[in-house]
Length: 100
Length: 176
Image (cartoon, each protein chain N blue to C red):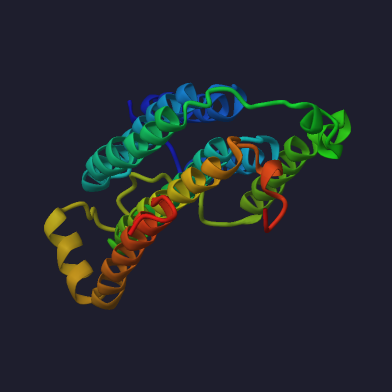
């Protein structure tokens, strides 16, 4: 039988993959995608704990996290579009100066 | 049966997530992430949360990923650019480039160690003593609109702010 530990370890692996993506990749869009992976790993933890305790709260928190993720994606992508207009690049190292 | 499904969905989720950060074309990254979200939604079904599984497909794989795909196509910058100044960047040193992988591995080791020291997580998830089965949409709605009313209203404000902010940021300068 799958236990709570199985789900926690799986979500730890997913979270670590997302962390590695944020650290290793040099493309703003891929970095945002890595953040989405991390959010999903945390969502899986919430649902697993909610099922474990027989409470519905975990699923509600996940619904809120999804809303926040949607808002974050919209604003983040708008910032990326605005930055790309200035520098014609998606590399975060192209935006090290605050003023140009 | 559910054991096999757990391992299948888990393997698909980990594999596609690893491929998302493992290859250079953001277009493929977005499409692989959709597959990863599909696998996670299968895990939600295994955890008796069918409502969230559907929401995951519609909102995440549907709406948010389409937004990403839209921007990837709009900017039309498929590859990571490696200019001269980029290749000479100190973070491009082979040792420093491995730092992220090392940190991520460290995170997995830490979390696995913490989990191995935690008691009470080895109980099977489908057991009868692991709480009653709660998966009805009616129950979710009742709790969301009674106990979490403030958070719900705050979320609506957040979405309004995000919408205004996104329009303001993506607008060309000088347009009124």
